[in-house]
Length: 208
Image (cartoon, rainbow, N blue to C red; front, side):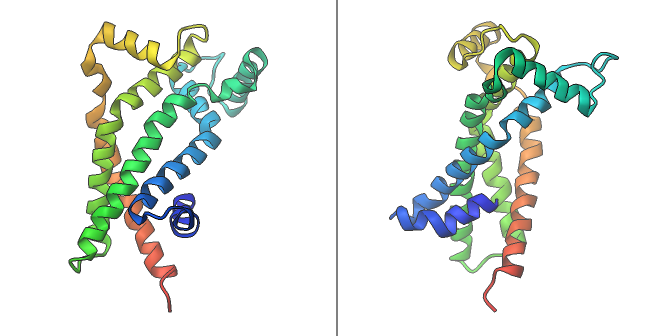
């Protein structure tokens, strides 16, 4: 949020002459930066979720870090960023579409004299739902690929061959598997998140 807001207000308006494009560019840029930084943590999360708890894998911090250290020794540091591509394919379009849609919807209501937390929540939830729908195939691909990286390091994980294999064996509908729970999580989360952010802006950043 801070990266997006800084790019939106300070950086991109200077270099992009089209104001309507600035939210899209800010969303894409912010998400690309943050996703790249936290990619090893995503691999760690997937490792925890994909590996059953056992005496040999107790899911303690020491055991998890030890497993990651083993991956680095065996495959190199770059292995911690395996799966970043599908993550960016999911998160970057999501963020770009979400912010462009949100800012447009908010401006639409503001031009008609309506603003405040309720409007922010509605715009955020609606934009999040639409973005989740559009990026659902990338979410499925990202999850499958990272699970394969953890459980079967030698398995084919290149994005397009893997996607083709999944669709051929499971059908096109698999690209939207889990869409309902994802929207059920994302819609209120986006609404609450942007409402809190807008309230923070109105309280602390408004001119006195």
